[in-house]
Amino acid sequence: MTASPALGLLLDVDGPLSSTQTRTLRVPSLAPDLVAIAQAGCPVVFNTGRSTDFLAERVIPRLAEAGLTPEDPVWGVGEKGGTWFSLASAGGAVAVGETHRDDDIAPPAALVEAGREIAARFDDVIFFDETKRTMISLEQHVEVPNETFVSRRTEIVAAFEEEIDRLGLAASMTIYPTVISVDVEHVASGKALGARRALELISARMDPPRWWFTAGDSGQDYDMSAQLHESGFDTTHLDVRPCGTVPDVPFRVIREQPRFDEGVAEDDITARHIARLRSELGC
Image (cartoon, rainbow, N blue to C red; front, side, top):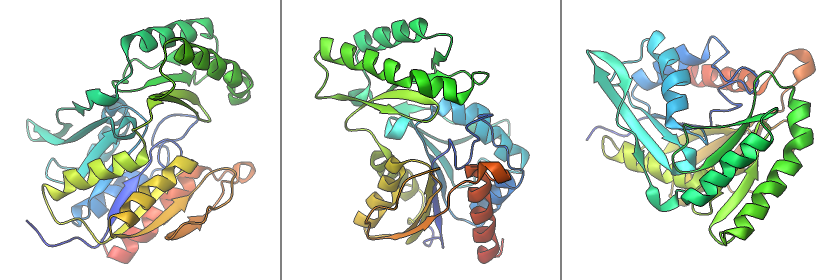
């Protein structure tokens, strides 16, 4: 067991790190800064509604290009706590290890099939995310204008509400619309569950840091810092939502809104703060 590191990063992916338009790590400084922080001994955990496949295909390769190694303290928690992985070695190169899943919060097969049917009904706007294991996501096609998706989102939500009621799942499953998707998830899942998974993963290797920096672009992302605070840690949350006020919370919040008309998106804001943290760590 090593000494407690100076800082921990617990980061949402869509928005704060991955562009909601390109679905990639677009800002050039993000990958090298995250790798440098990890190689300074500070745990970096992605706590996202995305699947671990998304992390394996869109995020970890960018970090590998920036010098990430299998020994670095980086973990992925997907589907709001439903899936998770540690890094592994593949011929000496960094790779994503075995994905673990919590089948207790996975949707029943009948609801998954209903989700496929809804996706087919609205396939001019959305697609069914086949990589999800413990939740259902219908996501906007990249080439579809966001305003088109938003204009149809209410219909998609209504279709899911009807299926959830028909299947008698209202007590266990909930719908969470986002700016680019409609997610259906178990009521026990969420960013707080993801934070608990992160602490378990880190604690198996090192003492968790006392100070944490979290970042997100939705109201749910506050649950990351809330869980850490309740667990006795000091935490600061970066809120990069396009709109919304800061709730009354017992931890520090940095509130910065994207200025799309000036070319400043959510990931640009996060990248600036990650660069600042790297500088403060001297790495």
